[in-house]
Amino acid sequence: MIEKIYSVTEFNKMLKKNIEDNPIFNNFFLKGELSSISYYKSGHLYFNLKDKDAQIKCAAFNYKFKKIPEDLKEGDEVKIFCDAGVYENRGELQILVRHIEKKNKIGALFLALEKLKKDLESEGYFLLKHKKKLPIYPKNIGIVTAYTGAALQDIIKTIRKRDERINIYIYPAKVQGIGAKEEIVEGIRTLNRIEELDFIIAGRGGGSIEDLWCFNEKEVALEFFHSKKPIISAVGHESDNLLSDLTADVRAATPTQAVELSVPERKILVKDLEERKKRTIRVINAIINNSKKELAKLKESYYLKNFPKEINRLSQEIVNREKNLHEQVIKIIKLKENFLQVRTERIIGLNPMKILSNGYSITTLKEHSIKDIRELKLGDLIETKLKIGKIRSIIKEVIKDA
Image (cartoon, rainbow, N blue to C red):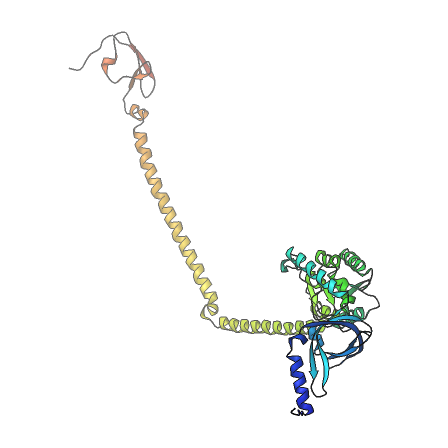
């Protein structure tokens, strides 16, 4: 038999390759109880997983990016999804953790939550068209959160820092555990009845997913959606969107960020106004200076210098035109008078009474002028009108012209 001699390094490499390349030791679940839990600032998590007879070392590298809870504690029963690996330098077998699920609790809740999300999404509760805009310059802000929590103090401190004039209305509510969802719902409803309120911030600081779960409750999510006032979901978590984040008008990663998103800094506004004031003054001064220059040019212009003379010239022109017009009118009137005189004389010349004054007479029969002797017969009573007086005659004889 050939003797096989390996160095420790060679053996550890061979051990690592055989374990990590074996599909049996990849993508499997382990269940057990947690112990010796250590969270490191580097972002790694180490613990032992044990049962009554054995234990094994586990490592969750960059656990935050794997959405692994940050509140694991000694004795928690969990189910982990993992691979087997070998720490080559020490020849130690360890479990490389991908996901951790607390036993009989969060798993079922997540399944129910995913179904609820799909239902609400299909009914349009997450659509942007339903999102109300926050006011630009709020004066009154309502807050629903725990009265003794750090979140409330952070919100108040940030508001006061950004604009100390804002009025704050607080509805103290439980934000985790039994009764939390009912108090959050009642808080939103109560603040909505305050007419002068500009918007509402509802939320809490960070915590485990169990602590935050009341913001995944359907009743709470729908109350966010139906709020008449614009509402911000401000729960201290960075990874997933809670249900209230999806139905609220605005989602903030933390209560402090909720204020930063909704309350402008007064000192910045004042500074901006000062800048606007300075720009406005510069523009006005420029307009005034330009106007002065234009006025100086006008003063030197020919028309302005000769304005009195031009007025006198125009006045005299108007007088001359009026005089000419007067003369034209008189001329027209005289022509009309002459025309009228000629027509009058012609009409007077045609007047029968004028003829009578020249020795003529007018003979009528029954008020009908006689123009032809054949219109008369013997015995007719005729009337002859002279310039002065009338003569009535009876026809004795009718003599026709030869």
